Amino acid sequence: MKDKTNILLIYTGGTIGMIKDYKTGALKAFNFKELIANIPELNQLDCKLKGISFEEPIDSSNMNPEHWATIATMIEDNYEQYDGFVVLHGSDTMSYSASALSFMLENLAKPVIFTGSQLPIGDLRTDAKENLITSIQIAALQENGRPVVQEVGLYFEYKLYRANRTTKINAEHFEAFASLNHPPLVESGVYLNVHYANLLKRPTHNKPLQVHKVMDDNIAVLKLFPGLNRSVLKSILGIPGLKALVLETYGAGNAPMYEWFLQELKNAVSGGLLIINVTQCSGGGVAMGHYETSEKLKEMQLVNGKDITTEAAITKAMYLLGHKIYGEHFKKNFETSLRGEMH
Ligand code: ASP
Image 1: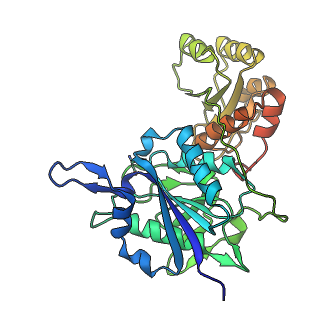
Image 2: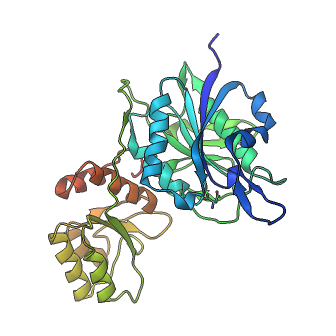
Image 3: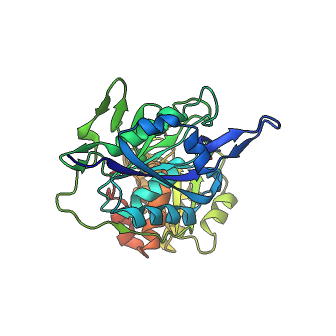
């Protein structure tokens, strides 16, 4: 008989590990031991659990690429010893971190499941227990001695999604995340229902895990809105050192046709700025050239973000620029699905 599966919990912070200070009413971070002690149910799980923690657990609003590298290192250092990883993370920036990790962990063949909660673990009505327990069970799922999930996922409120397809859509509901352009990988009801067709195709030959920790943060995001004026656009495009701009356009990738607007973009592109066209809609994607209002963007060779989320676009750009991939090469790589983040 095979030994129990080994799962490593990585605690970074967030509401899941907080407790209410009943004197002040404010939420403060637990330490990891206290967190685990609050979920005695963990002892009943059919797997071996170990935990490691950020020295200082953080609210995820304070996350940055250095923290992502820390999480990547924790996974790299423990990759051989564990069958799966569960990362406890605040929900606010979870989609960014989980997307980033999906790019940083190349040839990943084990589950890395991000989860958190809307209510702290110490709260009577907490969603933390279900999220954590089911994430561990999903990370422990094996078939023919191999993990069922071999990618970075995000589990929240009964659904496991591909992490780089998710967005936080609600600040109050337990169902805080959506993945509008890719269906759930696993759904939790009476049974854990694995949707095999939605999982990333497993690697046929086992290439070793490669961990990429250099992310280039010389990027910006601009969401188009009616009334965006020339001087605002010009200053954003002219930011010194800016290498890529994620441009959130309307609908299927459309933008105004004003002469000045197109001219400013054209100048920036010819100066070497990589402009990525993503839609500001939550679902669907960019179809450049479908409308007159996106034809010019296509002619200008804007990078086609297709149906990628803004979170994945930002982290994919950081990852490619971190590899010093620029120009045509960047466009080609960005427009190719690297970790199932676009169709
Ligand atoms: N502010 C918290 C965080 O993202 C919210 C949460 O954990 O859900 O760290």
